[in-house]
Amino acid sequence: MTQLEYKLHIDSIIERVEKARLSLSAHHIVKIVAVSKYSTSEEIKALYEIGQRAFGENRVQDLAKKSEELEDLPLEWHFIGNLQKNKINQLIKTNPFLFQSLDSLELALELDKRLEAHGVKMEALLQINSAYEETKSGVMPEAAIDIYEEIASLCKNIHLKGVMSIGAHTDEREKIKKSFEATHDIYSRLKGATICSMGMSTDFELAIACGSNMVRIGSLMFNK
Ligand SMILES: *Cc1c(COP(=O)(O)O)cnc(C)c1O
Image (tube, rainbow, N blue to C red; front, side, top):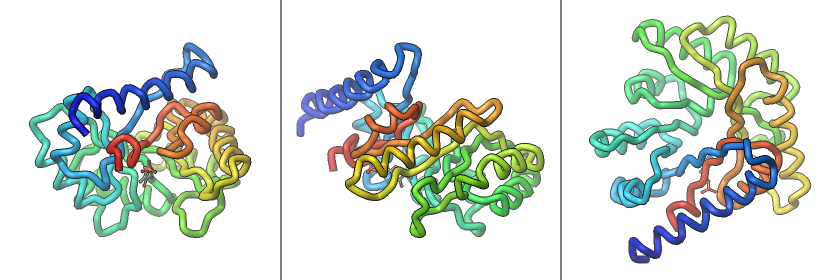
């Protein structure tokens, strides 16, 4: 694919996002985070040159490496993966724009302690396992609101901005839709939450129809 063809490909994705958000409301703004976990720094730079600014990684080591290689570019980095306790300090050092995958009170307490020691704050989303899948991280929907409020009151160095969820892993649209609706329902009941992050390459239009205002698109954005 030439750079021009790539630009047209990205334009077509943006148009699809536009169409989906406008069918909800002209006031509904959706942000695209390009998930670069399968891509090289070169490929990230090519997408940056087309105008993309927000990128997401799911491994702390990859986030550290790529953000360092691309430190001259004004990029916004999102961490979207499972955070192991022994990687917390490394994540703090990368100073991510948004940690989207905070998935337990226990992790929040540990992260808060380390943020305190580093004298920094971090913006985060609470990850919800709305599809009840054992392979997925996240708090159970029934417990989400209590845990969110607990983190907000106990962890002064973590600024919670909303929720993140991965749609049900199935071809049945109804099931995927149900998991998005469950996430959005929780989001709408949280005081002060402004980000509802859901939707990936194969289901972002459905996610937007269910109220998502942040989509995380990987393989499609990078044409993999
Ligand atoms: C990989 C990943 C994505 C992007 O997935 P695609 O299907 O490639 O769009 C989004 N969110 C999370 C949490 C991921 O791990």
